[in-house]
Image 1 (cartoon, rainbow, N blue to C red):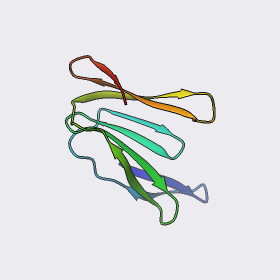
Image 2: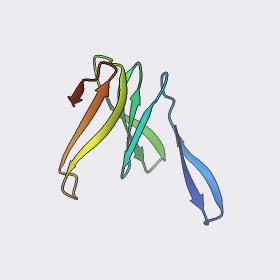
Image 3: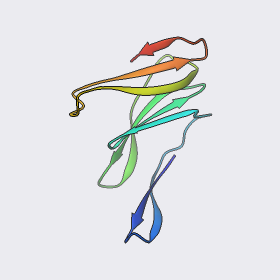
Image 4: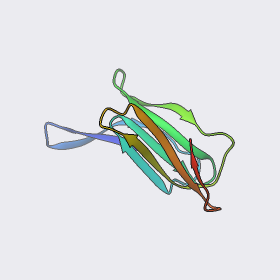
Length: 96
């Protein structure tokens, strides 16, 4: 996963990078957080750190499940209540 930024509204430059394990069928972004669904290694929750600019692993779901889709469940506009919904290959929806 590469995060890019426009510099002077002219050039697109890579500013942060993280390597995912196997296969990512779903990616969701809210503000400076990214949620990745790895089809074989579960859910990864990463954040964009400002100084120095890099992607930091904030959390992972254990045990590994075969995740096909992820989404944020947000209540209100201030992100006070944030949950993660995950659907797996067995068509089970889990709240993390």
